Image 1 (cartoon, rainbow, N blue to C red):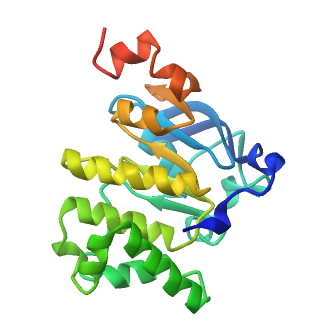
Image 2: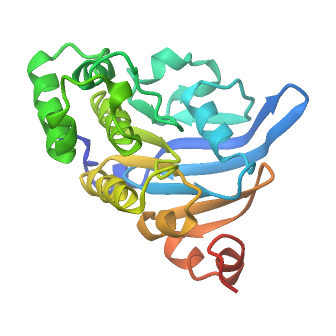
Amino acid sequence: MLAELIPEGQAQAMSPILSIEQLTVHYGGIQAVKGVSFDVMRGELVCLIGCNGAGKTSTLKAMAGLLPFKAKRAVYNNSVDLNTLAAHQRLALGMALVPEGRGVFARMTVEENLDLGAYCRHDQAGIQDDKERVFTLFPRLKERRKQSAGTLSGGEQQMLAMGRAIMGRPDLLLLDEPSMGLAPIMVEKIFDVVQSIHAQGLTVLLVEQNANLALQIADRAYVLDSGLIDFHGKASDLILDPRVREAYLGES
């Protein structure tokens, strides 16, 4: 699945698909993000971790065009200026969001939700192929394809939100708190799928409060605190860092 998303050549794999410099986000008089800079390289899985209120979701929503923001530099795919790009234009350019809280269309069926994920596409045969691939990733969705999305469990809705995003054939998947409110067995399933689609070449920017899980699957990580990046590095290094272990993994 998603074989077309695998980067071609080492040079492409090392190029940034998303480059952000001095990002700020305000809610009225409150500054939620205070000058964050980060890059996501093509083919990477990068996570943003931190406590509640650190600015993680605000950063992701800004990238998706759901919150106004300012940035010295906000470039997607080496050439697209996100400062001037409307939210509805981003999927067509290869950026898809799985929002916090799933955001499925409750009165529509599972299949209708998936069809909406492909609304920018016109290749009907490819759309059908990708739908079957989503059903392979999430067999429960196939069993419930004619069921209203609002009647699904929380875990099934998370599967649907991810499947809907995949239907857009994104180059960059923005994934916001996929483990929130789910039973441990469902969290394990969701993270297995994230690893699987990333292994097939999809670039992922993951916001996740479960720092332990996020660091286990990520290539690199940024730690946010009160709207600023506290520190960053390889995920394999940060998971062993005493500061991270004490503050985010509950260890001393």
